[in-house]
Length: 622
Image (cartoon, rainbow, N blue to C red):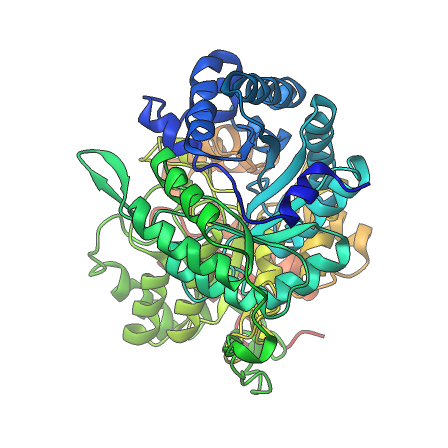
C-alpha cells in the first residue's frame, strides 16, 4: 500500500511551506542565535510560524530542524541535544497541524553538516554518516510523515544523507533537494543531470532544488531535471536576492512574481512547490492558489530542452613545469629565508634587504609568512609578487588554512599561479584570538592535508570535485614537520597524511641540537621527501630564554641556553651564529637545504652563518 504522502502527490501539485529562518528573524530572533534551539526556549514562536503557513494553504510543513545535527549544534555547545530538539520540533509541528483543523503532512527537515568531509576537511566519513543517522532516527522516532533533505551543495554529502535515511527510516518518503547557482550548477560543479543520475538509483521519492537564487534560475534547473528525471520534482526557490534595508534583510520577489514562475514550473512537471529564504505566508498563499488552478503537465521530452555545456574542454594535457626551487633541490643544497610582510603597505626597507640576500649568491628563495601570530598585515601573495617582480628572487608562499574559507583559498591559489608564484607551503595558521583582531573568526573549512589534496588536483587540471579548471597548474607543495615534537608518533602520523595528500617537500621547525634531528632520522632511516631544515639563529641569552619559555613549539636545550648565557650580551649574536653553523655541519649530509628564520629582520645573519660554511651554495646532495 502506497504511503499517504505519495498517494496525494499523484493527484496533483502539492504546496510546501516557506522560509522558517526569515519568519523567526521577522519575529525578533537574531541570526546569530541557534534557530534549532528555539523549539525548547521559544516553542510558541516556532508554532506560530507553522500556523501561519498552514493558514496560507501549505499542505506540508517542515520541522524547525534544518541544523539540528550534532556537528552544527556543537558550534553552540549543544551537541548532546540532537534527540531533544528534533523530538520537540516534531511535537510543535503536530500541535500546529491539529490546531489548524486542516490535513497536512509534517516533514522532517535535514540540512547539511556545514563542514567538509576528509580528506579536505576534519570530519571523517563515518562521523558524517553517524551525525545524519542520529538526526534522522530522532525525526523518524518522533513520527514525521516524510523527510526533506534540503540545501545541499555537495552531491557526495547528499548521497551520504540519503543512504543514512534509507538505513534508519526506509519506510519514510524521501525528498532530496540540492542548491544551484545562477549558472545552473552546484557550487561544486554538478549539473541537474548529474544530480538526477546520482540520486534516482538510490531510491529517493522526490528530487529537486531549493534555496539557490530566485525563481527564474530555479525554472531553468527544473527544466533540465525534467528532461532526464523519472521521479517527481520539487522546487522551493528563494524570494530573489537579499538586500539590507535599515539593518534588516529584505527579499525582492513579490508573491505574484513567484506564483507566475510556480505556474511555469508546474507546467514543466514540478509536483511539489514551495519557498525558501525570504518567502512568507503571503508567498505561500499565492503559490497555493496557482497550484489549485494549474493542472499537472506531461514531462518535457529530453529533446525539448537545450543542453548547456557547463564543463568546457580543458587543457589538462598541458605540460607540468617544475619550479626553480624544485629543480635546485635535485642539484644543490638550497637556502631559503623567511620574510614577514610589513603591517603597512610600505616595503621600502624590506626589499633592499632582500636584494642584498640575492647579491650574496647564497640564497635561493624567499619564504613569505602568512599573517604570523594572526597579525594582519600586507598580503603574503602581494609580498611574493613584489619580491619576484622587483627583486627577481623566487618565493615560497605560506598559505594558512585557518584565515580563509575554501572559496578564498581556491581564489588565492588561482591568483598565485597567475602571478607566477608556484611554490606553496601549507600551514593551518594561528588562531585569531592571539592577534590584533581577536574577534575575527577562525575558519576550519579544510585541513592542511586537505588543502594539499586540492592543490594536487589543480595540478591535474581539475578542482576538488573533479571538474575541469581549464588548464593544469604547476604548484610545488611544502608541508610542515616538527622534529622536536614531544609526541613523535602523532607527528609522524600527521606527516604520513600530508605525504599521502601530495606534499613535495618538508620544511621543519627550527631546532638547535643535532641529536633532535638524528632521533627522527634513526626512526625513519631516510626522510620520504626532501627536507629543508629550519634554522633560527639566536640573538642573545634573553632571546633564547624567551623562545624556550614563551613561544609554543620552541625548545632550546639547556646546554644551548647555557652557552648563550656565558656568551653575554656582547658576544651573544656571534655565539648564536656559531651554534647554527655547528648544527648545519652536523646534519647537512642528510638534508637538502636550510630554511632560515632570521629574528628582528636581521637578514645579514643568514649571510654570516653561510659564509662560515665552505660547502654552502656548492654541495650536491648524495
